[in-house]
Length: 318
Image (tube, rainbow, N blue to C red; front, side, top):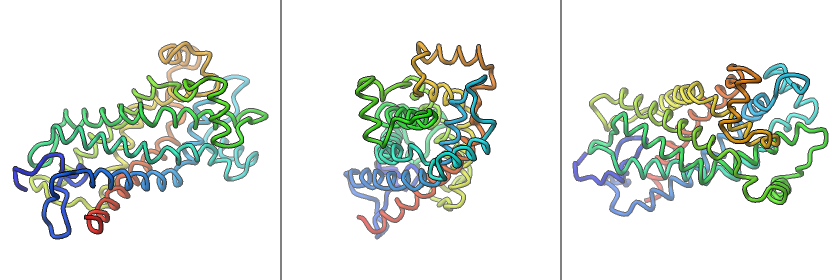
């Protein structure tokens, strides 16, 4: 690869310049690649959510479940069984529409931000230093938390939490959002923003760091070496597992801050203190198993499908 290749036109997932069908590097003006990334990310997000959402639902239910008389579930299987018995199989998909509506902007912000930050610090051969991998991933996570994830996740958690009540109030996405905004103002869909920034920032920092590091190890001295899609999936699963063990406590706090009973906590720190005081340290790892399954599958699918769509777009859309 020529040292004169503009860093901003290096594909962050293949570490190679964006190419035309004739093999030439893409000309100046990366807007087309950005649009491809938005579309590919949106499609990827929709497919991934439909596959993995039941595990996200169960994880959220277990994290909202408190000790004592209010406790409703004895574990993952018990939660799934009771949900299906009370609401049918599609009860496990309660709140799915919220994530579907938010998948395109979430993916656009995440991948767009990562590419932007990487373009600022990428090496001539398309690689990133370990510190820059963390920083680019962190920046991508913070951006997606502020602009997409917080409102989407807040509404999703409130929808799932609403189903726990004897008489659910939300009849659908827009009806539920209308009630939330009417009763709590626009801030009602922006609860837990601090915890979400911490969660998403650490999530993407860990995931992109692990993914980029594993790809670098595989490529060795040949930075143009293509990583097989199946191996991208394995790398993604490893990156997802690392992020789960690294930030599940933040995810638990975020979920509590976004639930319908968030009012009993003064702020994110108070929420964490109360969980520690009344439920113990292990409460910070509630829902780890279902989250582990969902996230590993999520990240593996995301990187595999995104990479595949970008390869396809680069062949047919020049």
